Image: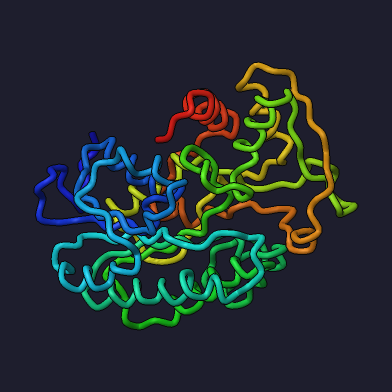
Length: 336
C-alpha cells in the first residue's frame, strides 16, 4: 500500500480529511478509494436527507457525517484537526438555467470553503469543470491567463468559471490548493443523477430493457449523428489523481483532469454493448430543445501541465473503463 503522509490509517488518528459532496458521485468514490487503502479518518459533508444517495455512503467507513449547512460551525471548532479539505459538493445540473441556484453552492459556499482553508492554513482541492470552456473558442488549455476569457454555455459552467476567476485573484491562500477541471466523468455511484448520469449508465439500462440504446442526433452539419465528441474519464482515474495530489502536493493551481483524448459518444455506446457481449443497436433521437443551443459538441483536455507536475501515469482507455463499470458494477447492481 502506498504511504500517504497527510492522514494516518487508524480510526483514532488525530487528523481528519474533510470531503464535501461525500454522498455524491465523485465524492463517494473518493471515500471508497481512501477506505480501500485503509483510511477511515474521514468527515463526510453533504445533504444526507436525499435517500437516493444512501447506497453511496451507508457502508463507508468514516468518523462522522455532517450536513453541509452545519459544516462551518463544526469546522471552526475542529480546524486544528483538519489535515485536508476536498471540496466536491456542487450543483451539477447543466440543464438548469436559473443561475441563482448555482450561485449559492457553487460560488458562495465554495468561497467560504476557500476562506476557511486560507484562515486555518488547510490544504484544499476543489472541483471545477470542463463546462467552463463553452464552445472552445479559446481551446481547452488550463493556462490561468485564459480563464477570465472563457465563455461557458450554461449557468453551471458560468458558476464554476466565476469561482475559478475569484480564486486566481486571492492573495490569502491555503498552503496548497488545486482546482480540477473535470471533463466527462463516468463510473459507479452515479445512479442517483437521473438525466445527468452518463451515456454508459443510460445505455446499460436501455439495453437491458429492449436490447437497444438511444443517442442524440447532431444538429450541426460538421458533426454526424453520434459523433459529438468528449474527453471521457473513468471516475477511478479521477479519484486516484486527487489522492496523488493530496499526497505529493505539487505546484498549486487549476488543472484539467481528463484523459487528453476525445472520443465520440457512439464509441461509448458501442463499448457498452461490447461489455455486455451484445451486437450494437443504436437509435438516434432529436436532442431536447432546452439544451440544443447550450450543448458542447467537442471537448479534449490539454493535460500537459498535469504531466509536467509529475502525474504522468496513463489513464485507462475508454473500452477498459466501460468494461469495468458495466461488468463489475452495473451488471451486479453494485456501488463502489
